[in-house]
Image 1 (cartoon, one colour):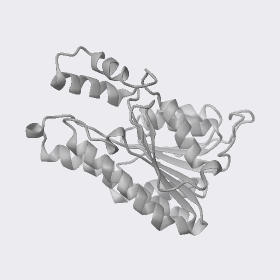
Image 2 (image 1 turned 180 degrees about the vertical axis):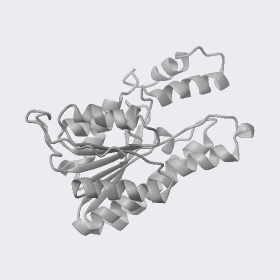
Image 3 (image 1 turned 90 degrees about the horizontal axis):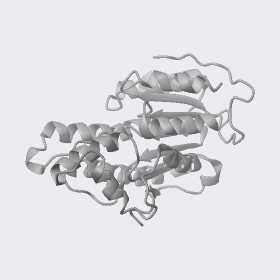
Length: 274
């Protein structure tokens, strides 16, 4: 655990200061979308609690602190209730509250049905669905006494439409949508909104793996070829970036989204329209 938290330096945050004096917890924040989310909230002045299952998350906190924004970094396995509890307890102990909780940790494997192991099924469901449940539970415990909060869950385009060779991943992400809708109804009287996002093809390490693994099973693709082919099917003709996702998440966390709950919103350049 790295709990160093530096005071905010004058001029250390952007002119858009929607989250000053608010605390944002983000898991899966060591790279990719999660890191992009953390940097966006830092730019808007939030206190950051960044977590991941690898020590690389400490470097993200260091990068944030270098901008003059306070940050706490914790290595946390979101499938373990005790570790999740310590994550949120540490957030409250350090910053006094949890205002926004973003459940972003996720994993994927790609295999033909006959080759898909029970172990892979269990791991994907544990991280992608159980992990979201445990973090939502802990976040709600922090938020309910205060009568406000924002919970935002990362689903996937595969929460809209399952794709070949990933039945376990699709099931885990459909589960995130169901969990989101159920909790939105339960927590609305407590002043807490619960929403989900469905990123499409985003240029991250995960999509580098997807390109290679799907490419091997779907044909003789060279690295990068399959992703380029799929990107041509996106109306906007480009892959997304973590910053594209961060814009949506920051909106859902803001006061402008106070009357939005139980929704699942695509961020995919128009790949899936619903």
